[in-house]
Length: 410
Image (tube, rainbow, N blue to C red; front, side, top):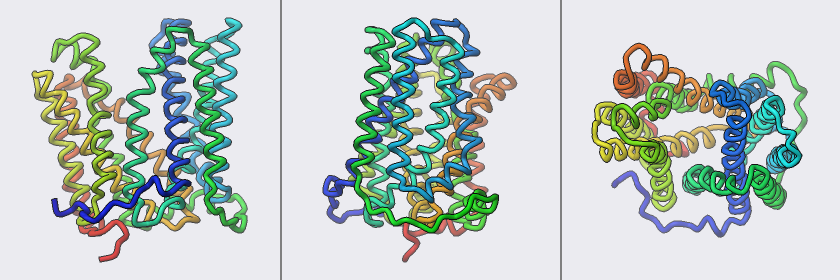
């Protein structure tokens, strides 16, 4: 494939700062996935309410939305590794509080909601600092490979974390929370040991102008705006995850095991593709490759919508995960390389909200259109809509469509 690099691969393991970051992120993500399994199960044990389960997710998302601009400003003013260590330390406190409350049978619905808000606040500051730190840890030529490798670790954690959490939960929720706390402590230690050079910047007073600087920067850069908005609208229209229970039960006629396999399929595809991109990063015609990947995502979504075969449905979802990973790595690389370091925190904060909003609103869009058109009509419309977005975005963002290299050089 002409768009894949053929030169020898420099080793990411030879970059200690990045590897400490990678291990810290892996530990933190596994801990977070385990924590969410335990909180969800415990909430349902306490209330038996699906509404309360939904509120747990909402109470985590709202702080990220409300604190976006402040979190981005902090990531541009403070040593990002220390911001990440602080966020992990907050999650240590949350896990310890849950463990103590559960051990003393004092865990309540209200406590779980309050701690969900606290977890959302920590994540609000964690995400932009995490995204903006990677370009400081590796040479520019290795950024795409580093992002792919980082995504591989995250996908592995997303696949394995809930399974580990469910297995450990058999010993009790308290045990899960203790294990989570240990993982968060490990992440704190690793983040503090990253050791990248932090250059103190002149402190910018907090004002509306400084808080909105990231939004202004994105709006004035067609490549960055096109890349971020493409993700928002493609995921908003193309997501079928929320309707998988209906497909598993009523269309493909499988049990809970089938639902579990279908839910894992995109993550497995993303994991394998991220491993491949770590070895063979995309370095040529990146704009066209990105749009082609999103188009493949749309076609695979259409195939899933029309499929009545469990195997074909699994393959289609696997392809959506793999295609999305290609797009994610290119988009993230472009956004980071197009953004000066003093703006990366604020730009990453806005990007994080776009990603979160696309996932949350995408599930709402799927449910709303399914109520009107049925599940097949909803997913089919989403796949077709994704292809329309690709065609429109290639027209209105030609610098992005014709981008040759990630760095912008010929």
